[in-house]
Length: 430
Image (cartoon, rainbow, N blue to C red; front, side, top):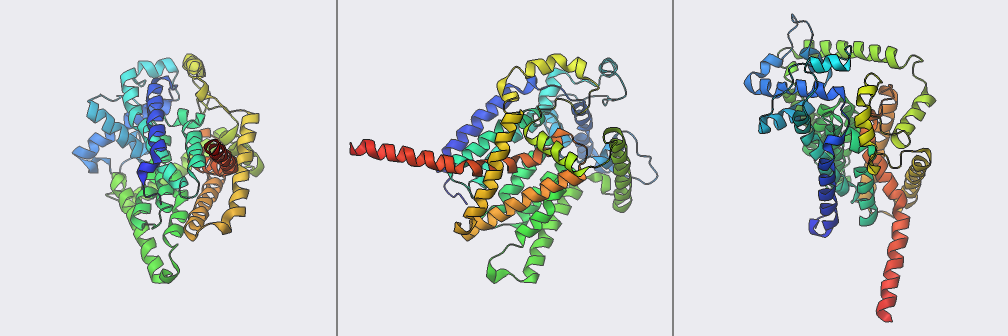
């Protein structure tokens, strides 16, 4: 663990500058209709404060409107938007976005947020990005020297996918934060089950994808010094982790408070129906492993930042898209040559980690194994369970990608540091 934060002044300045850049361009990010849904659902925060049981499921009530979102979506993002609205006293939306209507009809129905409302709703999700980068840095810094760790943070912070998907009033920024908090929690010298449980709850309550981190969390809290490797101790730590995770999740989801088993069954049925509908609409050929693998790799490294998941409203958004794409950081590196280079450095990072593994101290070895395990669970979880190839699904993989690219670049930074030190010594002697 990096004890002396004062010696890490570079990351403070970097995150501060990036935060200004993110907030400067917040209004340039093209609108996504799901932002309207999140803003519309942010009313839950106000209902939660007045009467949380009004958000609970009842078996004799049909799942329609908001109750469907309670059943299928996680609540963290809409609470964060609600907090921003509450602090600024900004009214929400009276109507949800209707995908079956035209752009003009949705505007007429007042489902399109005003500029002020959209900026307000995007503020906290955008602010979570530099916080996530800060946590990510002190995770990476446990296994990498300062220079490649800073490069990894810069690569992640200026990734066009982060700049687009995480500056919207949607779940991706909260999921990025939950993932970064989880990585930080499992790379401490002393891994605390409560902290890991909180991180898991943050990731999962941002988006269900966070559940892929649960097995790694259990492995992490069971990774103890040799003298503590007792089954009872490991069960106690695992139980603490799971208990914290479940309690926080239950408290954040009043949908399950009155009739938890019935609510869970209803939620499962609705999500299953939705998934089948999405698969029939977007994956007519069914799941094909190598095709899905190529889609995943392309989304991570090659494909341009996807303004929209589907093409319903590309014409009305054309002006916003053009203005957004006029700025270099919004599209850099998203090409076959640029993506191939990133993939080469990532693979080099894996190979280098394996070669250097035995030379590392025990604590660093544990962190490397846990980071590698996280990469594997997230990669294959997204590949096999999130079969629709929408780009924003791969957001939790981006910190791990940046980590291994940073690792792959470490020989270059080491060589540069050696050359600079030699030149400095030569100058002094002369």
